Length: 323
Image (cartoon, rainbow, N blue to C red; front, side, top):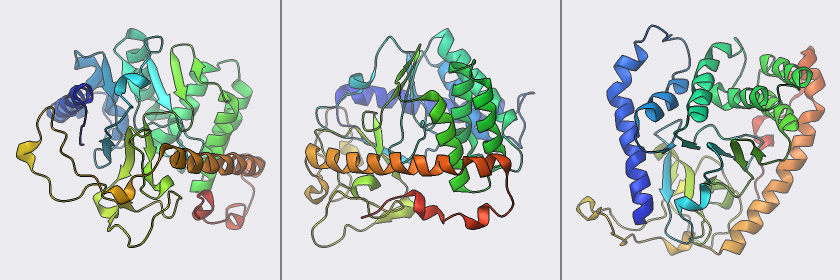
């Protein structure tokens, strides 16, 4: 993590402190009477952090192998916070997901209880299904909490989840739930930021290019996927979802990583305008909307779990769009 602004540095230190507590408390936490080693450990992360932290804000991440970069520019942490909401999620740009990997949580009774309930949901993951762990469970969990009157619709989606055998099935199940949740953004004390308005986006959507005016955090940087910056001109259009380019030039001098240091040397080749980024993201959003309709059209066979349906599915790359 690389932090650029004083206020975001403070937020980053809170996040790192929370992760440190998580590591220190890990043995006691996972050896509790209620701990089952066969269950998904990701569910056990949020609640102990928020319970022990004195700061009213916590940022949860489902994998510390994922690097998030806070960019210098007009965007600040405060732009994404609103005291009216106890939990703020964001909408993933390349599909119908409500992101389970990063969200803002206020240290309130409502938020803590919701996280406890979500942590306990790991016992309800469908056996033998490609369920997506917490990324899949967050959707039906929210639907149950926010739309308790939609029992029939939710149970139909649950059947699709239980019958999920491929990534395409999982995307179809997610689309099923999002059809219940709808396009709204405010649900009482919960907020789901629309595509392109959250605090994080996947940088592969714009071929590793970003805008200091627009972007706050970039997601999906794993060292195993790091690639050299290509020769020749770059354009902010999606090319490959499992590659990323280092936006910095030169080596890092850790002795200079102190509060107020703004000496990062960015690779200008990867910087573009806010308008160029917005244009490409909007184009991708239109394609995702059409893909949702296609996925919903196959839900009947998925719910019925018809014979050979999986054999006629396209490959997983059909879920993504590249120029």
